[in-house]
Image (tube, rainbow, N blue to C red; front, top):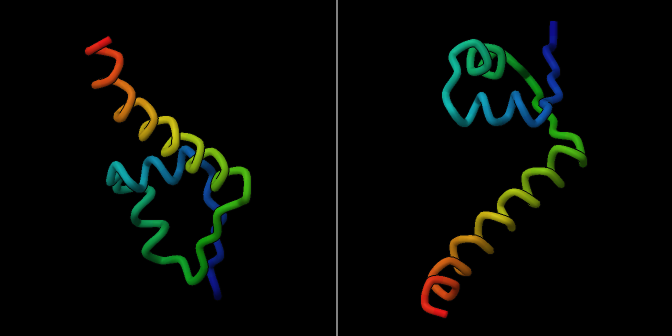
Length: 62
């Protein structure tokens, strides 16, 4: 039987943090999908992180 999974944001973060329960499911999956909503949330968070990293030095000197 083929196993197909679609991850939400919490499952993706759990995978990145190495939560064994989530990793076990993903290892057994034949297909793993991310919805456009999850992709948007991840991109937004990455953009926010980059903005904060590059803005902090500027803000601390002005």
